[in-house]
Image (cartoon, rainbow, N blue to C red; front, side, top):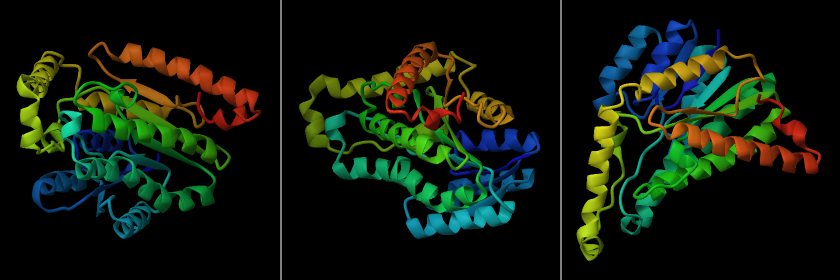
Length: 289
């Protein structure tokens, strides 16, 4: 069984994922920004189930270095790293301040880079490992009012494309999970713009984001299969697959959008392999099915 470290383990995706992996016999550690406050009950529940919990802030390099080291020590090694910590953003794009955007990118992109810099020396030294990442369907396409969030996930997808190739020679496989919208507390913690003057200049259109969000909530309520547990099931299935035979991207969606994203992904994979073949580096893609 694998030794797995999950960032953002107390979140809407992290908790069911950790519990599912523990049930399969994997050894799990996870990070929370703080054990206190809203994470306290979830951290206690996960520890009772057998998970090791470390405090780690992915927006701070020293905290990330210390947290990853503590997780590796608690697990007595590391086989699987899951970059799952993330933050959302929603609102009319012009209203997002540069500070709002920076906050989102600091977690979703730079935070992943901090975790990778802390964990990769261990994985490269042992010559084998699996790294997973939580992206999004709107890390593949952009939809209204999610511009900042989509941009951060598009950026994540780009750096993971590079990590996939650059780490393959060290025996480290890479997998991206692309969920559709899920009914989790993720929506409660979204970064939202606060610029009343600009918002007022949008007139009636300023009400559209709220109406769109309400429509999404109704759709999710009417789609019982669209739940975080589906992501946990997909991750368990991935880790059951042979090393080097896992797909690079796994779409998890039951709203009808997923098949379109899979079609897009298939075309991109064909284009990527063709380009790499032309440059004589197609072997850098060999650690994925």
